[in-house]
Length: 229
Ligand code: APR
Image 1 (cartoon, protein in one colour):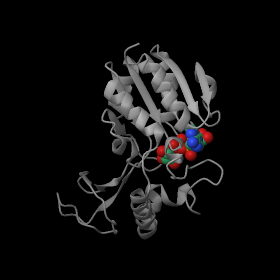
Image 2: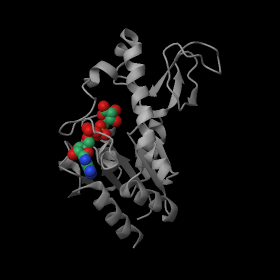
Image 3: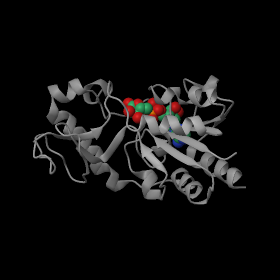
Image 4: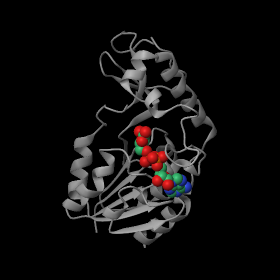
């Protein structure tokens, strides 16, 4: 085994205190996903959408990476083969744990996107609607979040990694949102072995060669120990 691709979702950050989307009591602090997470919602009520992400960006100050993030960062440091950690999460806990070979396919809370010129820039404070882009000057900055109906980032790089993968591992994701939910079948079609680590069986669970059920903070460090042997 040489090349590993890992997909992570909200479940890997749950033990850090960030609510998941679809679990019991799942997120959105009273908001329906469709009310805050679509281009239509942003056009209709920018103040609501910006405030929603401002609160979540600010909440990052109060959370820290957990044992699962730390284990993947260790894998990144010590695994001599190919590795790509693809996260659907918009928190920054993978990178704060020290992971480097990773990407955010659904955007990032600590980033602003210019709707006019497309520039993405690190952003740590509140982002009021009408904030100006430092690149082109347009008052068109929005949260750098991939909304429903938008195309995730770096799909070509992800597909190239899946094509080369010997092992695909899905961690803490419900398998409800495409295209990420389809990665297991893509990896399999290219010949990779597939493993799911999740609290409960995901929607695509049947596609995986093997499933381990439990908390990411326990399962991921144990799996990384096995891989690094
Ligand atoms: N350890 C492991 N898995 C866990 C834990 C835990 N401690 N806690 C919860 N889970 C599992 C849940 O059982 C569930 O299957 O994590 C999964 C979280 O699923 P979702 O809340 O649907 O999150 P995710 O799959 O990341 O959502 C995908 O939907 O709206 C969006 O764009 C958003 O990126 C997000 C996408």
